[in-house]
Image 1 (cartoon, helix red, strand yellow):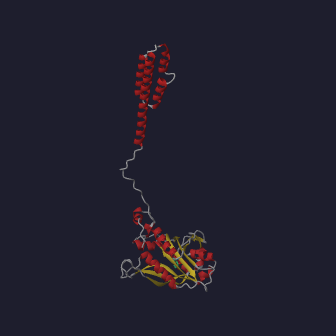
Image 2 (spheres, protein in one colour):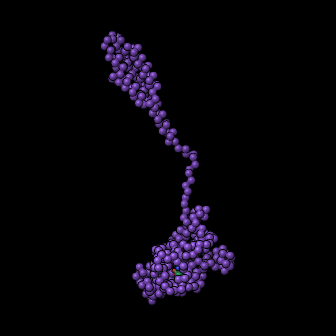
Image 3 (tube, helix red, strand yellow):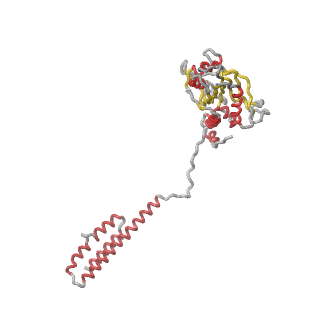
Length: 347
Ligand code: DAH
């Protein structure tokens, strides 16, 4: 009996040592230590033993069980440790590995100019208005004092969709739409940034699609000096505090009087250089006092109300501000160009 027990011990320990997975260990446990296992079987024959032998065999049987159980436990522990180590190894992160660079985008230069100008005007109490890019002939021309036969329509060769519908050639129709919405009651103070379209052949200074920012103020007692003061603030904000502006007489059908606004040349500080064509001044935008016809057509009493309006060419501002010599750079999506505008500077 003693021999048989030691033999079983030997056998079980051998199997446990050779086991390669948890399931095998469980099988060994059940097989050797279970109620139907060979050790129990052996112990069942203890009745036949003498009184001296019985406790010895009993003690031996316990030792054998303990030895097998402890071997199984030891092996099980080893498996568990190995499993944890394997998991740790598979999840290992090399913290010394350099991170993958995050490619940060940046604003398009035109978006930045528009947002900066919006911020400035919002700060002066204006709201931002919008209008459709596909516009009716009425708002694009007629409501702006450009009747069908008006020769000034030649100034703007347009993309017509039908006889009455076209791609807007300027942001000025938003003036007419906004005034109409106010139903003759002031004040009105808006700017309107947006895309406009003209049938121009693209070259360094022309693009068939470009951006404008329209400005419109209507109230009682608005005069030319309000326009001048406003645009002076604008010029200094965009081009620097040491800039000056000057107004030159001009013509637009929707303003009377009309002006072109120049700023003093930043490059030569007014002395004259190639950028300002040796005049010391650079033309940046057009504007004027809203024509009484335009006010009346939109439902405002031109005896009570007056107003000023202006139109800013966004690309022109961006070209002057950043020294860009070809308008097409803004529309050809060349990252080498666009990446140069990656920090936000504010003046
Ligand atoms: N709409 C004009 C253009 O496209 C720009 C302009 C001039 C707008 C004078 C105005 C203005 O509001 O008063 O050339």
